[in-house]
Amino acid sequence: MPASERAVLCTEDDVRISAVHGPATDAAAGSGALDRVFVVAHGFTGSWRRPAVGAVLRGLGRHGGVIGFDFRGHGASTGLSTVGDREVRDLEAAIGWGRRLGYRRVVTVGFSMGGGVVLRHAALYPGPAAVVAVSAPARWYYRGTAPMRRVHFAIERPAGRVLARLALGTRISAEPWHPVPLAPFEAAAALAPTPLLVVHGDRDPYFPLDHPRQIHAAARPPKELWIEPGLGHAENAVDAELVDRIGRWARAHTEG
Image (tube, rainbow, N blue to C red; front, side):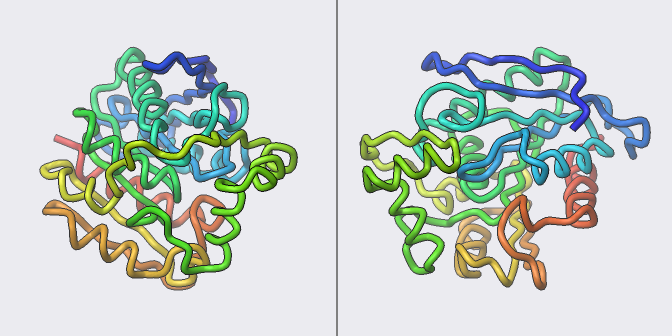
């Protein structure tokens, strides 16, 4: 995305997070667009510099300011990925930057791992005006699809972590979770009255439809579930029309 401002943020545990901010575009629609910021949390092995994430940031820029960032162990950020645990601190650092920039309404939008992170973050930290989880897992340790078995190989095996670092630039912690963090569906139960939108594709090769349904069922109103026909997985699958619909949903739930 054409960046107006870049920053290196510091988390509460002293990890340096690479981030970018763009103001609302001239075509930003609806009242409150200049007061609203979308903080976009990418999926595992992603980065705000990836074209798919950039397209999401540009699309949401029609509805407010946008902040993208690299999770720890990803891209230009320091630290090691904990695959959804300590990443809530990275998201909180990005939200804090948005607050310092003057935004009053923060909408968190997470994809895949980032979807789990935005759910957990909203249950642990007060503040988001709305939460959007796209292609998110409902529970941890899921190995029911071939892509997820490959992900677990990358996370759990020394050879997999080396491959992820060399081939994808993703540095993964070898330490097991202790304690196991709150599952995304459990976090969803604690979000109300924060509006929640769950988006999932019926052709997602990573997480079948019982995942979004479990998240949605656990949450209390206000909540919505969009099952998108033909959609695959996360930021690499969404198109401009879906991103715009997400932006319009967020606008409707954060204006006034």
